[in-house]
Image (cartoon, rainbow, N blue to C red):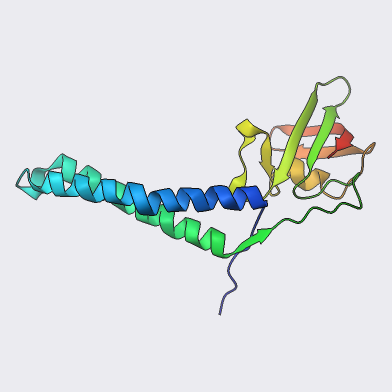
Length: 158
């Protein structure tokens, strides 16, 4: 029996996934079924692009529902470690400066299920997070990225 993948995430991240799941099950699923029924009423299904599009959307919605259910079922909530506040870990926000003279950047390290770089949330599987996890404020760290290596100095962890 294979072990299912765990999805580390914050409590807020799990709640966001639960809200999306509820929306897909109660609203989106019904909308898609209505679109299929309307498209069926147009007649010949063999050349009915509206029907094909609605069936494709239905497949996407059902696939997303299954994925969300799996992620929620296998969620591992990240507990905040209040004792070691200067160590970079999952669920913490890390601020660093790219050396020698880069700008300050801040990211919250989260599980892959809730990563969103545009909101400043990076996956614990990303090269930056992998390099920073376990390190402390004041340390200089070499981050190996696809674009090349960069050296950063950790200035804060919240």
